Length: 77
Image 1 (cartoon, rainbow, N blue to C red):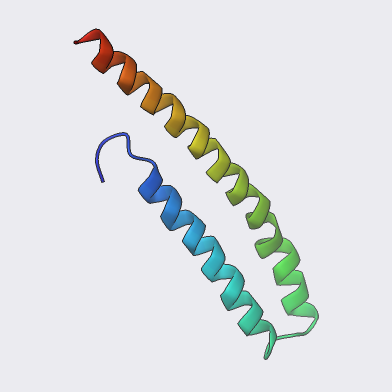
Image 2: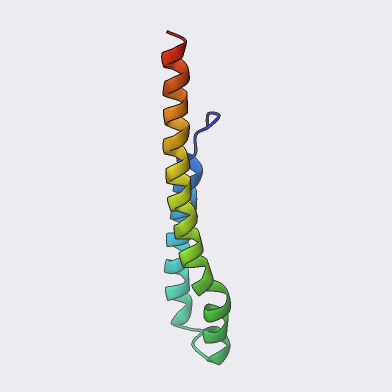
């Protein structure tokens, strides 16, 4: 991963979120009681919107960094 490259980390984060969701769906087949529901509500549910918001912010930051890199390379030409 090169300096300033946010897409690799963001891709890993998005994949991890998807894997977490798949694993949780699988776990619910055998762990479906009040404790699992509480765990989901307290730990899994809050992650989803936070991670999605973080990925959106990373996307915006990546655009800013790309623009800055272009501006710097244009000024050096």
